[in-house]
Structures are given as structure tokens and as C-alpha cells.
Image (tube, rainbow, N blue to C red; front, top):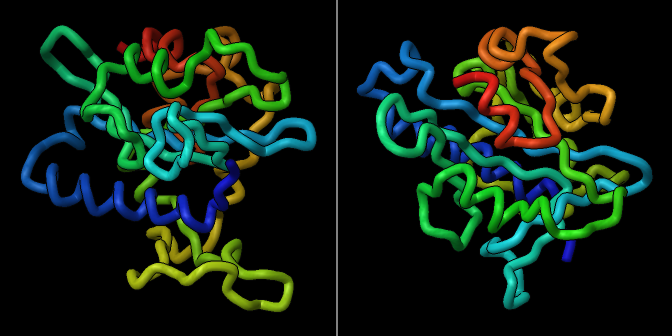
Length: 209
């Protein structure tokens, strides 16, 4: 099953609203408790990301092939699990410890074709909110007609007035995967517009504890 990013862009907006409502009265920005993830994949001819336990699926196992997906990782200062996952499109109980989400929804042990390899762009929420933009042009066909009814809310515009840069976040290749020898992981996640790219979420987050 394949679903267009036209549908998934609404997830980004819902994440914006969800966290604005729940954290606007806290000092989470200062504590760096939230890290926003843009799941993206672009490798070979395929652009499909398999994820399980998704609400949009019609299968018993909840499998969906997205062209990209967005979740939020909440960093907890205290508690048994330092990182919790919020996936508003998942049927799993939320929030879910990162390890549990990875094993159930991403299933790295599941044998899949190399063309479906998952790559992850990790960006701190305030950085993403400041720079991300989409005017929904990807939701139109070559004749300029809507391929799906656009959402009622306004398009997302970056602080600097940029109207559309979605594809900058989606353009990921294996050569972008971080290495401790080439980048400062924490600096990339907490200060760079496009964050850092990883191919193993659990391993990556051990670097920014």
C-alpha cells in the first residue's frame, strides 16, 4: 500500500498544533525535551518507507508504504525511558518508548529489500518549526489541479518567508548518514536547519543523551 506525501503533510501540521497546545506554557524549548523527526527515504528508484501498525493500513499487521513519515521523539529528563515516541498515525499506544516503537513499527530485524532501507533525518523541534515550509505544490498534478482536497488550514511558511522547501528535507542518501568522525551530532541536531541523518535510531540517540 502506498500513500502520497500530500496526505502526510497534514501530519506535520498536526504535530505543530499538538505540541503548541501541550507545551506552549512550559520551558521545553530551553530544556530541549522535544526532537522532531522527519522520516525520509530516497534511494535507487524506490521512495517507499515500510512502517507497521499504521491507521491508514487495511492490512492486519498495519503495514503502510509511505513516501515519507513524521513522528516526534520526546526526550525525558527523568524516568526509565529517556526517549518516547509520538506517532499520530500509529495504532500503537502513545507515547511509546523508542525501543518498543522501533521494534514494532520500524522492525529493523525484518528482512526487506535494500531499496526499502529506512533513513532518518533528526531535527530539533524549534529548528524545524523555524525553517520548514510547504505551499502544497506537491499536491498538484502537472496541470496544476489538486490531486487531493487540500487541508483547510493555511500552508506552512518559514520564519524567513520561504514558501516551500519540503524536498530539501526529503532528499536523503546513504552518504548523508552521520559519522562521529565527520560531524558533531549534537550540534547538527540542535542547531542545523536539516539536522542529522541516521540509519539506526536507537544507536543515534545514544549519541545525544
